[in-house]
Image (tube, rainbow, N blue to C red; front, side, top):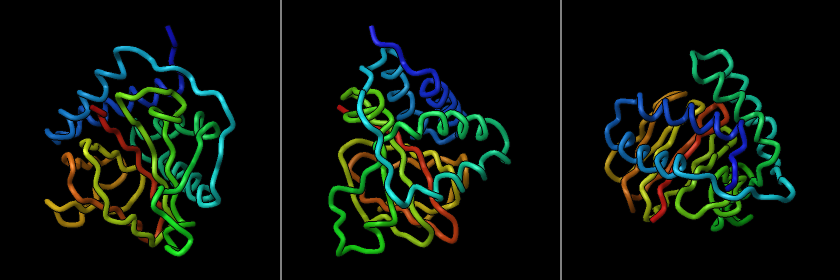
Length: 198
């Protein structure tokens, strides 16, 4: 039976605590679905080269350095992420094209868990998004519900709420199929996301 990378497990454990302690009932319920699946077994380990896009440096480092000065467990979450970030395959949104600058070269996503992630599986996706300052991640939707943990300043919008800034360690919940977007301001943007896949 596969075993999970220790740093990835630490990141997931801390994330589970943050979501469970958030007081956001919808996010807590979705988090229970995600983390119950993750707790049932580990997926297979992905082997292969990492890939980093230009936007990742220095944006990721700037955000993680800022988290080191925050209250626990954010510094511990940042440390766990640092330990695995060098193995991630960062990629652009599939619909992004060079004609869509500045978004095209100013964002990146990576999967920690899920198809092509550090841990391969099909029932859960755990990922991360980074954006340079002053970038809007365009309106989009997908069937699964989604929970975000903000790791930086930045705002979220969906069709049921106005633009909202939860702050580092804050939680955003997107119901299944809802149109939603994100945007950064003067600082780089970094967020973890969690989707139960049916």
